[in-house]
Image: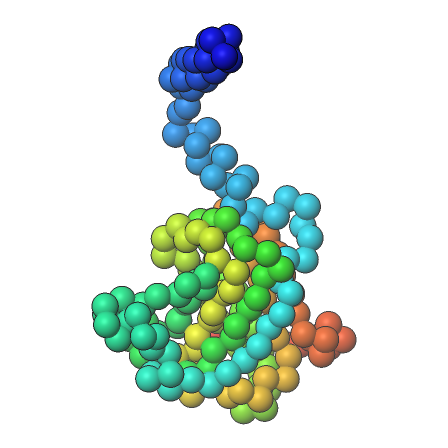
Length: 187
């Protein structure tokens, strides 16, 4: 028993000394955070499902938000084209697994063709701050953009780009893949 205590104490002391002697600079920490993020170096398909729904402002509130006044995503990252207006068309993008981090400055480009607007429209969303542990990305075309889009989406394409502009992952509807849509129009 005494030997077991000595071994345990020695291992604990070794780990403590080893951890305190390492110096990690900010550049290394940033690099490690990027590697552990949604960086997807294998360029595999990490988007598993995409759904669309029109929602009014009251439908976007959760019980948590009613009591605290803070929007609670609970495993979701919610981005809107107009943060002051919540009524609009939302795309719910489900990832195959929980994503560890999505870094500030990550850009999500959404290209849509709808019955209301057959011309391709591009909507860009930028992640305002580092977000962690989410499985679903919710993109809302709200405010004036809600008038340009309806839930009758014919074709769509999503590109997620890291802060440097490199495509991390992308997905598209079947119709988008067989069609060569016109250049996107940004409103």
